[in-house]
Length: 150
Image 1 (cartoon, rainbow, N blue to C red):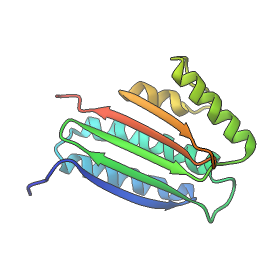
Image 2 (image 1 turned 60 degrees about the horizontal axis):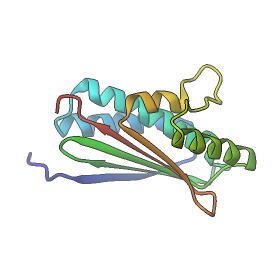
Image 3 (image 1 turned 45 degrees about the vertical axis):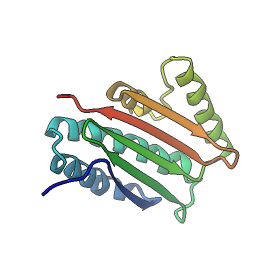
Image 4 (image 1 turned 120 degrees about the vertical axis):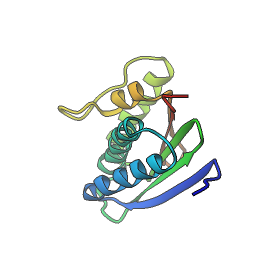
C-alpha cells in the first residue's frame, strides 16, 4: 500500500472515557501501518490517552452530550495530534490557563489528577506541546512528536 504523506485522520469522540482505549489503539495501528515503530506508536498512545482523558474529564463541563475532536496529521517524520474540547467549568478553565502560562515560561506543567502524570508526561514524550484557550473557552492541545529513527 502506497501512502501519500501527509494525511489526516480525525474523529469526534463522545464525552465518555470508555471510548479512549479504542481510539488510542486505532491511532497506534495507523502509525504502525504508516511505518512508525511499535515503540513510537505505544508512546503516542500514552499521549492520546492523556490529552483525551483531560479533554473529557475537564473540558466537557460534565456534559455527556459534548464532544471532543481528535485530529492526527501523519507526516513521514512526525505526527501532530490536536485535541479540542468545548471548555469546562470556570475552575477547570483557570487550571488550563495556568498550564498555558507555565508551558510558555518553560515551567513544569501542573498535574491535577491524583496519581497521574497528566500533561507532564505528554511534554516529556513530545517535541512540542501548545495549549490554547480561545475567547469561547474552547481548548486546544497541539502536540508534535517526531519519529525516533529519523
